[in-house]
Length: 208
Image (cartoon, rainbow, N blue to C red):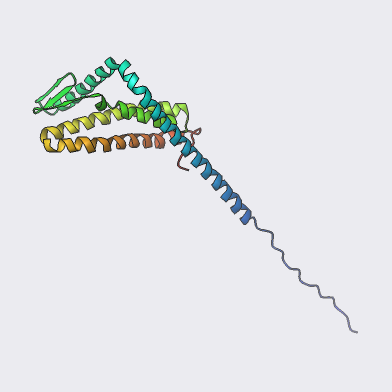
């Protein structure tokens, strides 16, 4: 007796649709959104920073006239601090008002030597950055004294250069002064972002 068997056809395994393309699409979209948000914050920072600098350049000349006595006292104070530091290393140092003399070489501390402009630029960068007011206050109260200390050391260095290497003083005063101005502000500002702003949950970022 012959039997007829029924052979079942093997079912084709239909693989479940993978979600990788979808995930990749969502990842790219999120990345693009983050990038666009970062660019927007960067443009806002640059615009606000330049706007604050422009506003400061308009207000400062009037404020310096109004606060003339205070600024003069600040210049004398800066000269006394520099003179005190130099006197710690030499007996041939005198300080009279805004003038500091070492080994017969005299420097005059004028308004531009006090670091006021550097502090104002730094404050503009703080205010323009997208972070909380608490972080900005911390940056101002810690960054300004640090900038002032750097400025004092810069004056002391230039005074020593003038006393010992008088031929180099003009070059150092023109180029070293400007280069260190940018370096001072940038260094303190970046350290503020790394040590203070990055711990602030409310802060944005202009770098991403």
